[in-house]
Amino acid sequence: MSPTTHPATQLAALLHGAGVSPLEDTGWLRITGEDRVRWLNGMSTNSIQQLKPGEGNYNFFLNAQGRIQGDAVIFAQPDALLVETTAAQMPTLLPLLDHFIIMDDVELADITGTQLGVAITGPEAASLLERIGLPAKHLKEIEMQTAHWNGAELTVIRTYSPLVPSFEIWADTATIAALTQSVLAAGATLCGPEAREWLRVLEGTPRYGTDIRNSDAARDLPQETAQTRALHFSKGCYLGQEIVERIRSRGNVHRTFTAFRLEGELPTPGTHIQAGGKQVGELTSVAAIPLPEDPAHPVQLALGYVRREALDGNAALQFPGGTAIPEPIPYVVAEAHKQHPASESERV
Image (tube, rainbow, N blue to C red; front, side):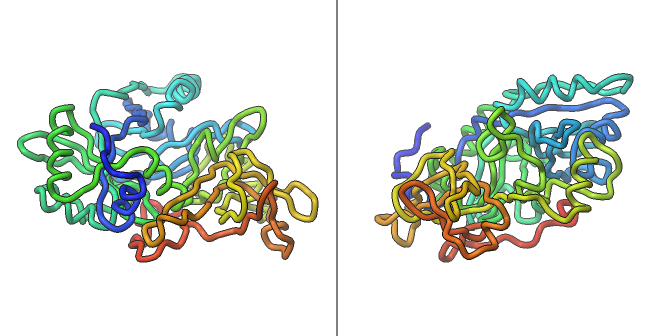
């Protein structure tokens, strides 16, 4: 099923109503074994041992030099840990984790594709799910539950969503097809990847492989990404912890991830930012976004990195063809419904 409305209409639904989108680029890893919690806690940057069944948190996986090798949301279940990441990361993340299973009672299973998923996103998402008989309002951010709908078992997840509420539903193919039709009949708008990408940029959420880099050109450190929600500073030892703690004890990193409003020609990702004639940063995601209040005049936004002294100074940040103006994350959208504060399980 493909969207029939314009992406600008889809974005308006995501920001002010409810949109439903297929989840086609998600990877899942199931971890079992008696040592799974202790072992994964030593591999990830957040506290796994504190998670109760159904709770989850966002994590980085690092190398010994503290550079980010991947990211994921990890959920606790009574008999397993579930790792949700992007499908593109699975070919590298699975071998990375498997390499560090030495004498541990731990088993990894790639369960990507065993179920289908859809995202229900927007300020009306929770009430829409309630109307079709699927309670979701009580869920905290990064929490999952098993539910039943029309006689079928499914998994409901409330995801990290700093601008508008968002939920994921995972089930068998027939159940997801029927549920999609039900939410569309209840008033949701079918949304495609372009509108979802615009929402991600508005939220200021970095994507691994795009904004969080691990290549010859750039290798990012956790604190540079501004995603402190992925870090826990009293959980015990883990791979790369020494570098993370050293950065914290020194008080800062030299550059940080942020959002920019762009004036001038729309640049391409990878464009460098300059201040006073010196290179001080780089744009990693770029978009011209038709906001609902004025879709005929898209706002040009970017995500990227900039040196802190340039961000704190008075010099103009420029790129070839225009100016980059730092903006808060998430971007302030008129009438956008803000989320409640993060749950205790996600705070660091």
